Amino acid sequence: VEIPAGAKIFNNNCASCHIGGGNILIAEKTLKKAALSKYLENYETNSIQAIIHQVQYGKNAMPAFKDKLSNQEILEVAAYIFQKAEQDWS
Ligand code: HEM
Image (cartoon, rainbow, N blue to C red; front, top):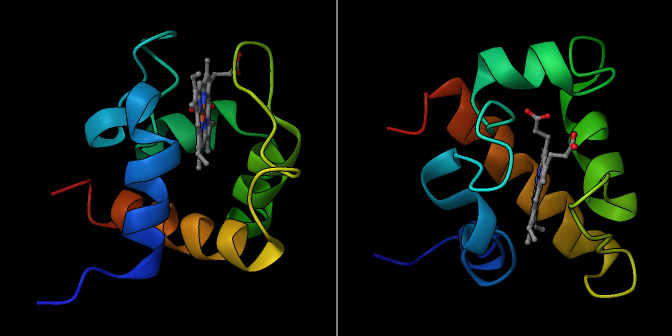
């Protein structure tokens, strides 16, 4: 089975801190739906755009990726996270 681009980008750039949709630095700020809704600005209004913004610019201990990943790659990883959150990372 082919691994989707978004999953590869996540494994290569995000899983070090967000393995399994968690957060090894700030335990409560996971990539699960309830945490995204609570902590990620504008997630309720535009989920994918809210994730894209966080990945582009980073926040606190999370680095920015806008000079490391292309817009296409950021879109793919954001869509991947949204889908995984909707599936509760199962
Ligand atoms: C938070 C995505 C890489 C550390 C978040 C959030 C998202 C996200 C959507 C918001 C979660 C929430 O507030 O509940 C990503 C993606 C990554 C990535 C897609 C790869 C492209 C990393 C890496 C680190 C990291 C490599 C560690 C070096 C953090 C931290 C927060 C966070 C500390 C909480 C920030 C705060 O509100 O203080 N991440 N992340 N992330 N991420 Fe990442």
